[in-house]
Image (cartoon, rainbow, N blue to C red; front, side):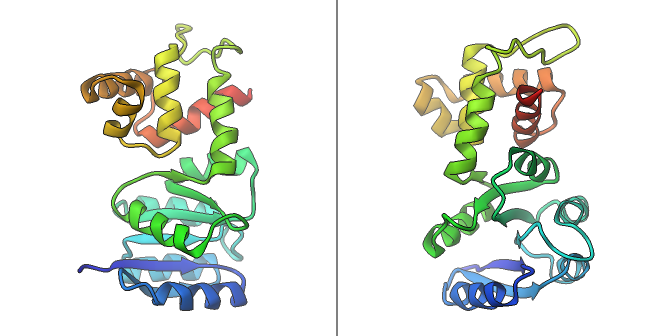
Length: 217
């Protein structure tokens, strides 16, 4: 079995060491490096090129968003998980725009759920913890109420496009979205293409982030 190579960047020594010991007991995960500052995280990522980068955004020396941006640009195959105490909508949006594929609240996640998240993110999934997902979905679903324009021409998301984008924010795959909405997977892809076109987004995650930003205006 191929192990997921994991890099952990956490400012708290106690939390970092405890997390390392717990994760090292999981046979599917290999903790290749741990670090406490932003610059250390960048150096370790360049050296080990991990599959998954687990980061506390409150790192010293170089802030977490900048660290994620640098790693996402240099190592696009490294999937980023944010493990944070912040439940601020702006922090979630900033993390997604910086390349994060998962945003997890420290105070609600169990070690079992964290391991599952690491495994899913390594496989290309997108995960947002329930407290943050609820906030994000509420803002996305308010797009129509606020008549938010997605393009200079004044186009807005249809109810079906909002539904698709809401499920993307929950981390569902195209197949899972199709099953949930009782439509074909091809139709889901068409909706996603239209959504990304309206927001001039290059990825699903960027579309979610931009939708949240516009809903907050």
